[in-house]
Structures are given as C-alpha cells and as structure tokens.
Length: 72
Image (tube, rainbow, N blue to C red; front, side, top):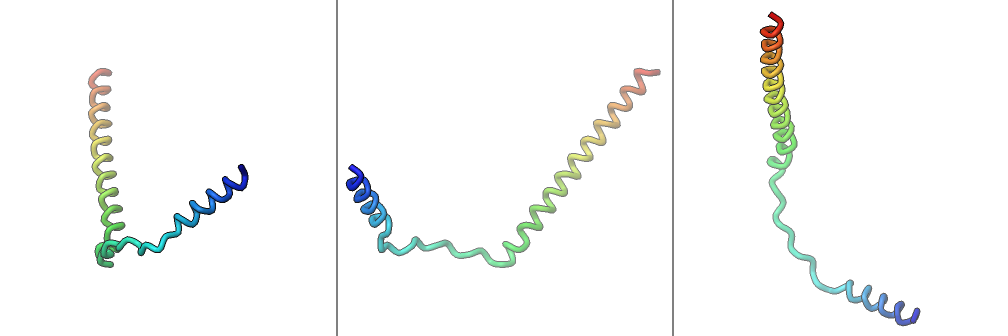
C-alpha cells in the first residue's frame, strides 16, 4: 500500500513537470502610466475624503440649527 502511494506521488510529480513553454505574458504597461497610477489613486482618495467631510460638516450644521430652534 505504501509503495503504491509513493509510486503514484512520484508519477504525479513527474507529470506536473512538463516541457511545455510558459504562456506568453501580455505586454508590460508603459512606465509613465504605472508610476502615476498610485498618485492618481491617492488623489482620488483624498478628494473622496474631502467630499465626505463636506457632507458631515453640513449635517452637523443642520443638526446644530435644529437643536437651537428647539431650545428657543
């Protein structure tokens, strides 16, 4: 039983090592576009955060107005 399992594992390992050439990879992107991509993503994140902060500030101001109206 143990010899059969060992022989089977050896055959599977040898079968996995084939002489097929590796699949061709796609052309790499130009260096300029890949270098600016991280900065673009950071700028988009920063703008998104600013937009969220504007919404939060507006909601806080509206809530302050409502509280002020209720206390009068």
